Length: 502
Image 1 (cartoon, rainbow, N blue to C red):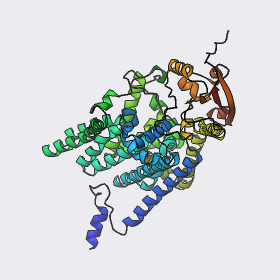
Image 2: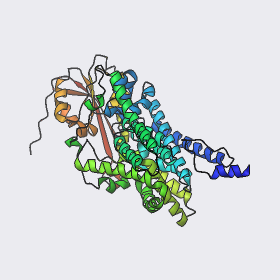
Image 3: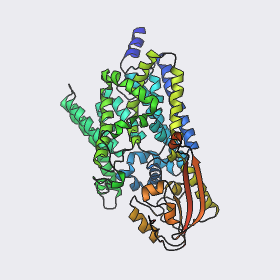
Image 4: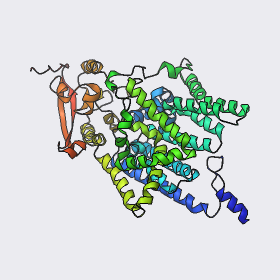
């Protein structure tokens, strides 16, 4: 009896994803693991309540797309939509942004849970800290409970690594085959898994073939769904609606091949950058970390090359590295273990410092505050009943569209692209009486027009609001960031503002 229990406790983890060991020693560990994940989930939900819209990247676009997909599933099948992510979000989208963000917080909490499990399977000391290490990465925390797609990708990656490491090759390959429908990096991760299957030593031919077949199931399902839902049964719908031209967009820019490495401290924050550096050597020396490190290298290497070449609309955004945040957490955990040998009595202080850094970096990012002046603008529109079903609406920031609870597939909302000339033509074509919300921060960046380019040039300002916030530039004495938003009505034909004479 005692021998059997000892064998169970010391044995390698089950090949199944999670068949918890039932010995008395294992119960407290499982309780602590779930307790830590639940605590992190609660923090993320509370943060989502405090900041309803993060303003990060395409987050509000994904929310609006999820709302459309709840009514019309075909809206979730094009490449930008990321079908698996919409499958998660769409059931909650009709209940509002907080419901969707709570669902995504659950995804993030599960990612933390599986990262802890992977740390346990790697026999890393302080494995419970692997969960907080995921969210101590400031940019991962910023979008952990957001409607972005990086955290679902991170969850898929960490589960796939666990399955592979536990010998469940076919299950791992099956999961990886669906990752392209989560994010485009999934195509390249699928290639890595295919290489692993071809080169894995000691595998039978049948096991290789069946595992490679499992790797193709996800793409086959995506094609089958497209064929079933498109009016012309277009099984190649994804390729025919591919939204990233190989040359990208000039407005997205390009940069150094080392861009992501140079800016790594911005992604990780100062505390975790130190821990990451300390953890590189022990991670490299640990056999079980080779596959996780290969995935981490693939993600950062891929985006480094794409941004360097200006290909496929790569913008150089560091938040994309959230896709590999479980691996970053494991490296940082090993750095923590190294530092703990030097400063054994500073654990609590270090944890407080990491947590404070995450909250502080979030609070200093002006993107996270746009939703508040926008809420005042949309309240002004609602209170005065300016927006009737037949009234055309336009906005320089799509958060306004979401805050006004427009229906799925709204016919009165004018979509704006990143081309200033296209925006100019649409502004000219707006009917008289059109209502809009514009700003001097995001709208000029993405649409090429400032408030002054519209106000007095066919558009009347009905409401004007400012928010002055302390942001990054405040730290170097440049003063507060001014978030300036207005509600506009088109009362005359649009006349372009003349450039100033110098």
